[in-house]
Length: 155
Image (cartoon, rainbow, N blue to C red; front, side, top):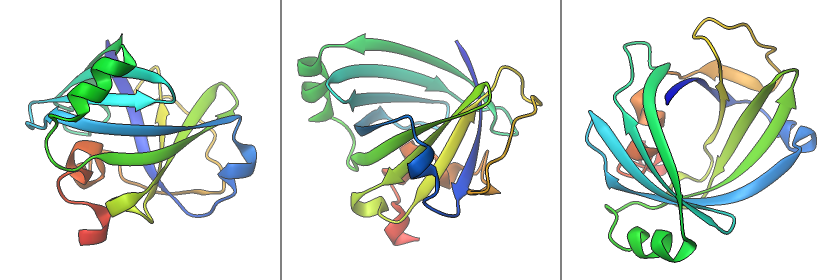
């Protein structure tokens, strides 16, 4: 239940042609405390409830617990979330043994495109595609919980 990931800005749309799949994600936050966040997500036709702990100093490692819930429960929970619903399209790109999840944000975060990669170890090497830009791992303004409060269009 430990998540190890790194996050990067994206410099082009080349990932779209490399994507093996894409899905729409709508999510909100029941709690955005810096010590823990509680997220409600609808991905395609499935609902999820996720709790994430505080990140380590580098922003690469944190506790994550996720449970699938009914779509009806997820829709009802979204109605009581804090203001600032996140709407995005996620592209999944397989490179070697790793999958990059590239999120194209919509609504108040339109124009922001971020790639994440989950790793087994914080220092695990991975192939960096040409469209991968500046690393923003650990920069909390790129956390979805913060984008719901202070969207990209307000920067």
